[in-house]
Length: 286
Image (tube, rainbow, N blue to C red; front, side, top):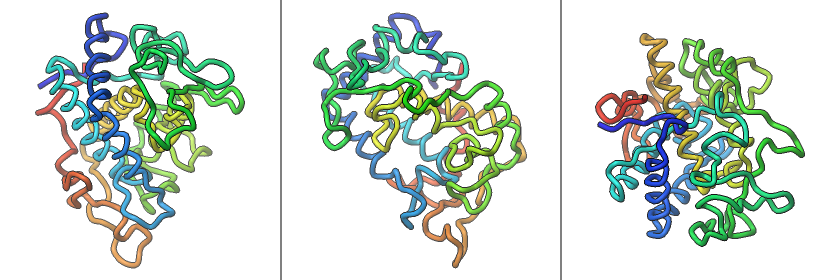
C-alpha cells in the first residue's frame, strides 16, 4: 500500500522523482495515451452516448480507476512515486509551492499564455502538447482567467458540498441540482450554494486544463487526487449513503444506456463502480 500526500509536504527529492517519472512516461509515449483516453471518454450528456467519466454518477469511480492506472504507470518507472494531491482551498495563489520552478512550473506568460518555467515548459525540450489540443506545441496556462475572472473554490464551498447526504440525483447528468457528485463536479448548477467545484479549478488553471485534453497539464493528476480524497471524506461523513443509482435508469428515462449503475461495467476497463467505492487496500491519504 502506498500513501498519497499533500503536494506541499513533498520533499525536494520527492518532487524531483515525480517529475522525472512523468517525463519518462512522456518520452515513452505512454503519457499521451492517457490524454487520448480522457478525450475519448469526455462525453457530453447531450450526445446520447455512454458517459462513464463526466456529467454522470460514475465521475468519481471512473476517475479513481483512471488515476490508479496512471499511478501504476508511474510506479513502473519509479516504485517510490505516488500521485500527491493539490488542496486548492489552501494553496490557492500563483505563488503556491506546486507552481515552483522545480515542480510544475508557473503561469503562462502574457499574450500567448505559454508556460516558460519549470520542467514542463516547451523550451526545456521535454514537453510537447499533443496534436489537436492547441494550435501550438507548448503547454499554456491562464491563472484566474483575467479576461473573465474565475476564483478557486473555498473551504466553505467544500464544506457545504460535503454536507449533502445524497450521492447523486436524477436526471443523473449536468443538470442535477442536488447530490454530492454534481455539487463537486459542478456542471450547470452555478446558482446552487455549495458547489465545490471541480470545473472551476480546471477553468482557473486554463490552457488544456479547461477542456477535454486536461491531462496534458500534469496538474490534472494532483487536482483529481484531491477529488478522490473529497469523495473519501464524503463517504466517511455519510457511511449510510451509497453510490446512486443502484441500477441504471430504465427505459424510457433519459439516462438509459448512458448512465452507469452500481454494478454496470465501465469502459475501458470493464470494471463496475461497486469495485471502486473503496481504496483502503490500495492506498491511503496523509
